[in-house]
Image (cartoon, rainbow, N blue to C red; front, side, top):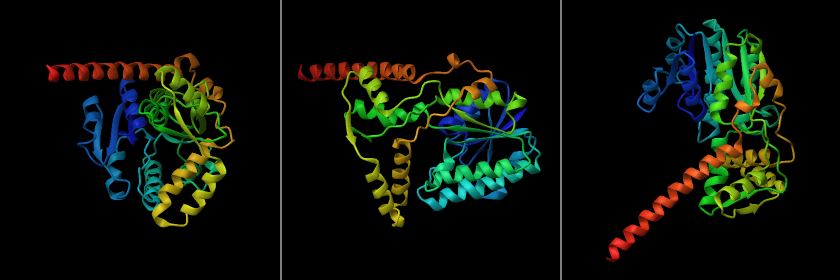
Length: 319
């Protein structure tokens, strides 16, 4: 089976490429910059030039392809580019997949995307989901609430650097997942016929509130977190105000997403059906506390070495 992967250089996409190669798949990645994606070639993937904003660059990529995994999400600076790539570009990819008669289209989306039409990214993800479902292509859609890797920047690094963490009075319970496990789920679904035309909510077996993550980080780092509490209604008001101005649309979207992940709505979805369908034992899936323990052990060891080196340097300069 030859897999065509979109977004192969991303945090999740590169794990999908690695896992597919480990499982014996032929992997082809559509990339805009082959130099930046050279590490994928070194792993064993084939690189082909393609740009979702330039439709004529895409058809050749589909020759001989059996299935496609779309892990791409633009990091746009404005809503216009986001809409162009995540909507019009994806429509072209879906039509090419139909023409090539692919056996599976795996799309990676966001949990509860249908409930937040005012967030551009979530609106686009949901619209693409519907377009895929209405097509004739056998599909599998995985929906995620968030990844462990993102929590490093949200909680771990601010605590280590003694910077403030934005929190709200209400905190949802979210089942995050490691990108390696998310990739494993995607690749395994390709060999299970029963996962066709299904949508799966995906996460680790344990869900976390933001205050629980902060407490975990404090325990592992030995440092007290600095938090700044903001009521959700103030985020809503500020989002509405900034939404009026074109220059602040990106800020507005970010505030909207903060509002989503911090409101009283519970983001946890039952994932036992996902585990059962993929025949995965939850003990095989990495949990957040173990992931953070490894991260802090590595970082604290590194900081100790840097401090020791600095002390030695200072002593030498004095002598």
